[in-house]
Structure formats: C-alpha cells, structure tokens
Image 1 (tube, one colour):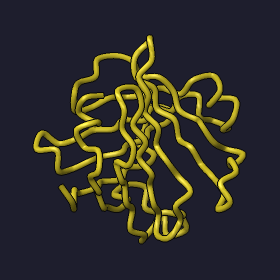
Image 2 (image 1 turned 180 degrees about the vertical axis):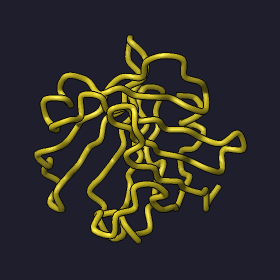
Image 3 (image 1 turned 30 degrees about the vertical axis):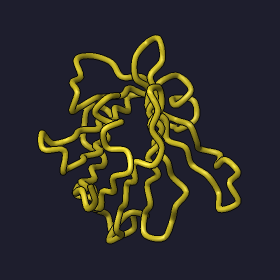
Image 4 (image 1 turned 90 degrees about the vertical axis):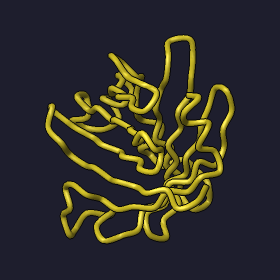
Length: 150
C-alpha cells in the first residue's frame, strides 16, 4: 500500500501488449492510469481507454490484506451491471507486485472468471506499471503503462 500511495498524483500511459484482438475494446487505444486518490486504506486509479473513462481500479487494505476491485460506471455515474469484481491478494506478493484472486462474488458475476488472477506490478524504478490477467492459468490480457508525470 505504501508503494501505491507513493504514486498518488502520477499518470501512466500505455497500451495492451497481449491478447490484441482487433475487435477487443482496448485494441489500438491509449490506456491511461491516474493515481488519483490515496489514503492509508484505499488507492483509486481511474483507467481511461481511449475516451472511455468508465473504469477505476480500487485497491483497499483491510484486516485480511489487500483487495482489488474493478469499479465500472456508466457516463451518468450509475454502476454498470458488471462492477466491483476482483478479489483479495493471496500468496507471496511484494512491495512491487501483488496478485489478486477472483472471489465468489466475481465468479458468480462473470461467467468463467472463477480462476481469474490479476497481477499488478511496478518496475523497480517505479516507471513501468503492468496489469496482467490470467484465466485457467493462461495469460488473457496484459497492459503496460509508462510513467509520464512525476
């Protein structure tokens, strides 16, 4: 959490680097992650896909450890039908990389997501942010972002 908090106010820009299907909503679009809101217990990272600003990664610290949620909203601010999915960090993570495993809510909400593992990693120099999703122990999506502001 301290590492994430240290990025508050920072902007990262990037693109999908894996699973690039020309029909995918993220294909050929600039991805922007802004570390917008940070406290001791929550970091909110709005993620922009092209002009679409409907997504926010929410990482919280609770009594059990870290938890990742994907908050999806409509333009009017109302929640999407698929929102707040994600799960807790499990296993050996580090200050630079954490893996989050789909919880029962996510498995029920999104068909086939029961084996999802999201990994958010930061390079040692804190200039490269990687978001990786695997399903059934196979890579599904990866996006790599470079820091553009300090």
